Image 1: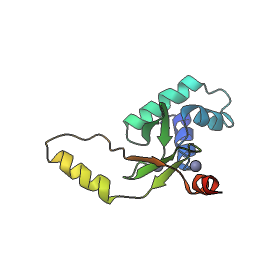
Image 2: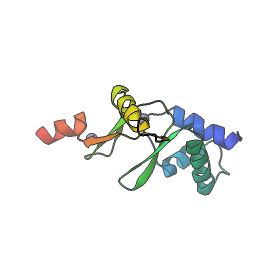
Image 3: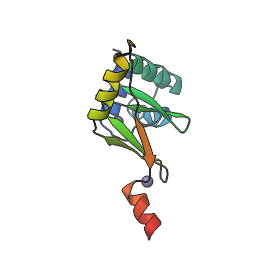
Image 4: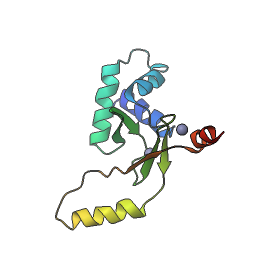
Length: 125
Ligand SMILES: [Zn+2]
Ligand SMILES: [Zn+2]
């Protein structure tokens, strides 16, 4: 792994905000001023292909997750926050059903959407 790739992976594993590529770029640029956005994109794709990180689309934008264990996500329609839902049973069950059909699964993406606690509170005030 190149230093750039390690830096990107380190950043993704230090946060649970599921950033987009530009946010990753802003963060790693602080330590690696010479890195380009294109390099960040390329490394993110490689990391996702290798299964080191998760990549999923929310509202047409790719987001990245340094934690690739089986978990789900909740997207807030109010503030756009992406929250980890540590829920193994549903994806595990779904995986088994899909594999029973003789299909090879590369990833599972379960995304809920709605309002987070803060946005719900703001709405009710
Ligand atoms: Zn919210
Ligand atoms: Zn996550």
